[in-house]
Image 1 (cartoon, rainbow, N blue to C red):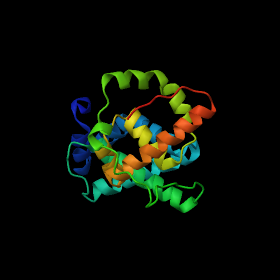
Image 2: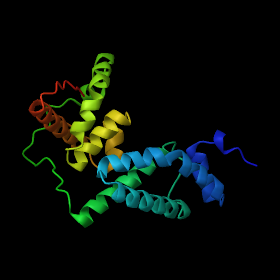
Image 3: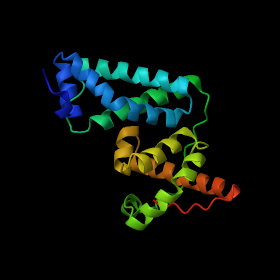
Length: 199
C-alpha cells in the first residue's frame, strides 16, 4: 500500500494521471479547505462557492487526464489559477457584480515594484494587528481587488505570482492592490478605523 502522506501534491497529481484514483482523493483532501476558502472569499456566496469549487475540480480532473499538467513544483498555483478562471467565467456569465478596473489615464509609473513587493518585519507586525478590521473592510471591495488583497496578505504570494495566477500583468496586479488600498482606507476612515497597512 502506498504512503500518500509522504508524497508532494505534484507527485500525487502525476500518480493520478497514471491511473491512481486514491492519489487524487489525497490531493483533494489536502487542497479542498484552502481552495474553498479562497473561492468563498472572492465570491462571498456559499452556494456559488460550492458550484465554483465543483467546477474547478471537474476542470482539474479533465486537465490532468488530458495531460495538461506537468510537475513544475507549483501545483497549488496551478489549482488556484483554474479556480480564478472559473470564478471570472462565472462573473462574466451572471454579470451580477461590476468589476472595476483602472482606466488608461491612471498613472502607475511612480510605483516601485521592488519596494512594493518587500514587506519588512515592522510592516508585518502592523499588518497582523489590523488584519481582523481589514477582513471586514475587504468584503466590500470589488472581486478583483478583494482577490489580490487575499492572495497578497492571506496566501503570502508575490505580485509576480498573483499576476501569473490571475493571468494579468504585474502592473495590473499592482494597480488592483493600489485601488484596493485606496478603497479600504476610504472605508476605514468613514468607519473611524485606524488603517496603516503598507505594501
